Length: 210
Ligand code: MN
Image 1 (tube, protein in one colour):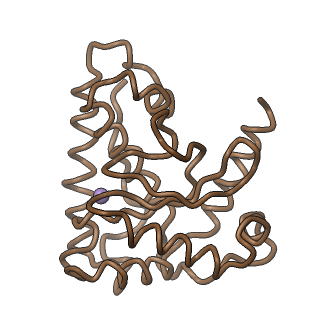
Image 2 (cartoon, rainbow, N blue to C red):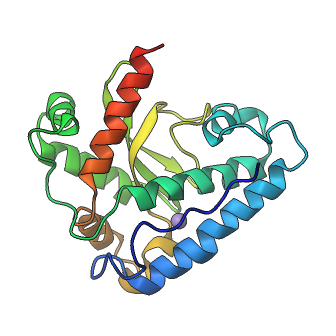
Image 3 (cartoon, rainbow, N blue to C red):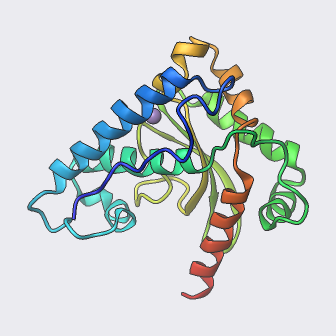
């Protein structure tokens, strides 16, 4: 079964003024759609057909560059749309497990925010910044080039990504031009912490059932 481009969970312009509608329209309708179409073409007729995207990414070192780039692109953008919402942002509340884990592993929310922002700002060229939970329930901030991600067997920091920020120029250039730091700062106004904490809880359940 072919992978399908998911609908955006909100209108194109719903994240304004932080992320503009035209950027979202092109990013979802052209870029994400392109990764999805090319991933399907790359796996058609191979033994990867019928596997989940997580299974494909876990063995990506044995796959073609097309599978690596477009499989990553498909997965990464699905996660990116999910972890944002209009009127989101702020700090996750103290009652959320993700907040407890952030305080435990980074000391404070601000320390996490600094580390994540730095990972996003210093990624040279195109790539992503991540908040990752590993198999021992520990959180890490990491960054990957291109469309790589922490689910890939080639990643330096492996685990389940629960928050991701796209720092390709296509994600911000129309509105921010070269001002990537402003885009990163404003991302913190649209994070959907309910979704992030759910992803954190789900990853924990998966780990404890191993
Ligand atoms: Mn992108």
